Length: 217
Image (cartoon, rainbow, N blue to C red; front, side, top):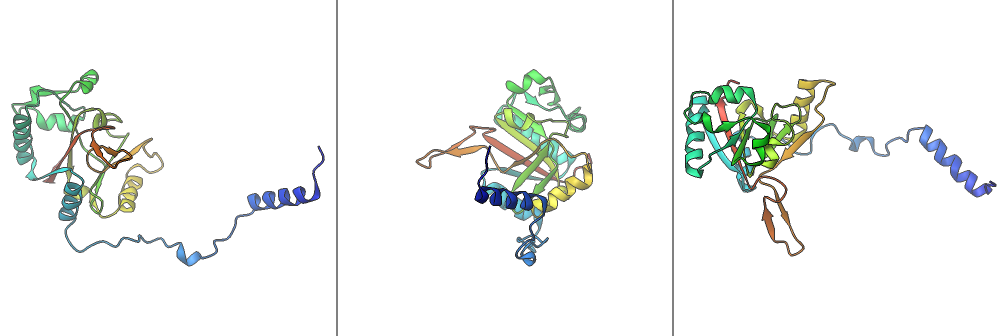
């Protein structure tokens, strides 16, 4: 096939561009610092404000004992009969609580449960975001399929911005990064062309975040 001189010149330029990296025109603009600077207020307060603004339900607990009591109250108040949880540390903590017989870890029960319980990788205070990964015992689906997702986190998992949390994940897993990292900011929601907001279409209708000062798991 004959190639015209003009086309050959274009192809040469493309080959050259692919073989040689193009210098950044404004290298000073490619800073390594986040454009969002940490605020002086406590990360707990910042997260709680952002999370509740996104229709999440925030509960602060001093320790494990208060956490178990508040969960028990929630289960009674919402009449939860079946709660799905597959994380061994949480199941051990719930053992002997009096309502642990309502907790199940059978895979098939996820699709018929009233709520699911997981931990998380970290919390982004600035955006009120819960970050989870496929490397957790809860897996990919536990926080998605149940109508209510209950997440339990510790105050030492709070970071200011997403980049801080991603650094924590990299430090934790090294080169063996999880196959999936999920960023969940409040309940699942979507809007149609008329901007009518619908909650719970692609995930849970309600999300609870229990933040514990001394979790110890």
